Length: 412
Image (cartoon, rainbow, N blue to C red):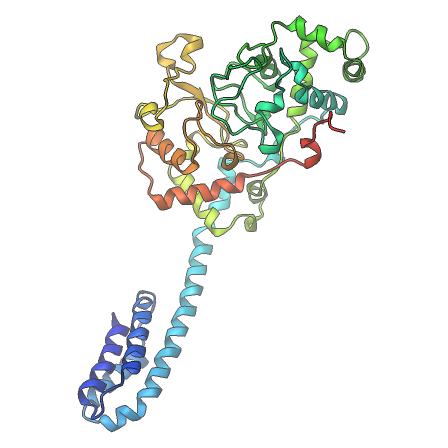
């Protein structure tokens, strides 16, 4: 409180020893400056010059004329000093930021990888074109009410932002939240329980699910598509002329299209070495993300999608998500008690745009989801500031596809 004491001394000298009391405006000016300086004092090292000022004021208490004469000079000096301190603080804070984040990039590069690091086969344009038609075609559902794009809307980052997606048959809904198709091909497994190995295998699942596309069997759909002249041309171009319209080719083509949904984010640019791609606020959030242990599951190129994990390592998940029903996850397939509540770890790309969250879409707000995950998976209580920091970082994972890709091929 060194500077505050100096200013209090000035006020004391003028008020006690002056024949004419300071007017109210002068007192307020000194007190305002004292308040400003007191907020800066921790960042300033005292100097001999300031000490000399302090002691000269104390020694000259009896010389009111000299003090009155020098009042403006001292106030001017202290005002200039406050501006100097503020500038030094700014420089110190900037240097502190640079030093604090100096090794963050190298740390991040060991934990995550940019999309450019993934070796991908050049997509067959004919298969991609066919797959896009199939993705948007409502004839891939029993009553013709939904398409892949209904639940995985390319206009909204590959999701429909609903807790559960409506099915083809009236009154039906899916049993779990629809994940995004963006970057899904980067995942080691598909579906919340990991039962499909890749996007090609995954594509056939909803089509034959009575709660989703409601196609009775593979042959029903093959027969339907064979009646469409357009598909004779598209399938032949992609798979040859020898009976190309098959269910396997259909799912393969949809997978080929989904493998093109790989937009790159600012975080990718950062991982490639462009440190300016992230703001300091986002870098701070990245540090909290790493230090809080989120990277145990959310790492790699997709920031997840590589493993199955128990949802609720330390606590029952439904008590925190307020889920209406308890989902046993992988146990429903394996019937292994040790695999109860195991789900695929979701990737976090575009997570700020793909609410609601978790396998049952039980949490709408991302900050709530971050808080719950820290408690359930790490048994950590994140502060509000830490949660804010993490969500700021997660926004750097946002990446969208072009309007041309979003556009349905059936639109004129």
